[in-house]
Amino acid sequence: MLKDRFGRTHDYLRISLTDHCNFRCTYCMPQEDMQWMPHSRLMNAEELVRLAEIFVGQGIKKIRLTGGEPLVRKDFSKILESLSKLPVELTLTTNGVLIHHYIQDLKQAGVRSVNVSLDTLNPEKFRKLTRRDQFEQVWENIQLLIDEGFRVKINAVALHGLIEDELTGFIKLTENLPIHVRFIEFMPFQGNHWESKKVITAAEMLSLASKEFEFEKLYDEPHATAKKYKVSGYEGTFAFITTMSEHFCGDCNRLRLTADGKIKNCLFGSQELDLLGLLRKGEDVIPTIQQSVASKHAALGGQFSADYQKADPEKIQNRSMIKIGG
Image 1 (cartoon, rainbow, N blue to C red):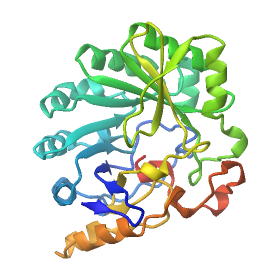
Image 2 (image 1 turned 60 degrees about the vertical axis):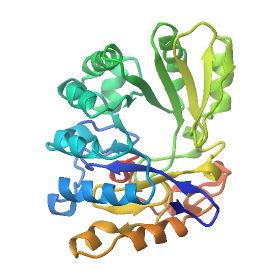
Image 3 (image 1 turned 180 degrees about the vertical axis):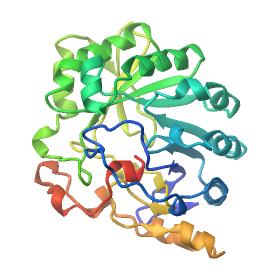
Image 4 (image 1 turned 90 degrees about the vertical axis):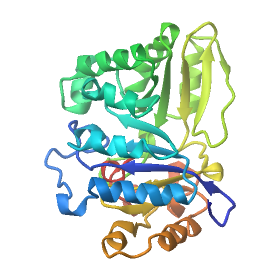
């Protein structure tokens, strides 16, 4: 069992398969000429699965595959099949554009829940945000996931100046579709031009939603990052991930493994310990995993306070979101 000095048990691992992505979202990866990590630095399939096995042996019960975009990895199916043999809940976060190529692989691996990143329902805004003209393919794949019986969550980064016009449309999706829409407060990472004034809080979004809908607060499961709501009579739900306005660090159970095999004990943490390097040397990685968990800060990676308006993105030591893996 991986327990930190604050008594938090960590049983959820997010594994980044790659730092590559086929989109160029402006708030995540602002440069078209991104410098990708060389292939030799990335975990190969066998190394990734071996590290996953070790984590499971230490009490991990859930693994989420992330990126970049995990489906751009050519050996995705092989990795998925190998991980499906572990006694864990296996899930995926994707931009959705390649889902139709892997739908049967996901079903055979026992994946039942897929998170799709989608920040707008307007095809033209989608093209400007992602620098790719593929909204229709993403939407078709969301429909495909629903038709194939997957639990679908849509993750929408709430960008001030954009989400105000999109909020109603996203919530209306939940009327006739069993979709779970989650609005994520805009978070600071290296190179994403974060400013506190760009954050629109969950409270502000709830106020906007209340002008259009009558809804109820739902129960939030232990370790939940999203505060859930439901419009009466609607099939789906909507929720807010309140990282900036009301963090949920006190109940955190997550660890992250980057595509180059570094363990991060917090999304915002600067500390990274090299598990892949140790594995390649034939050394035991368990003490390093335990060291990482033991040194976890109480909140927000120890890098800024709960008052997000005082956060200085220039002083935050971290990777860009695409190189962390979400």
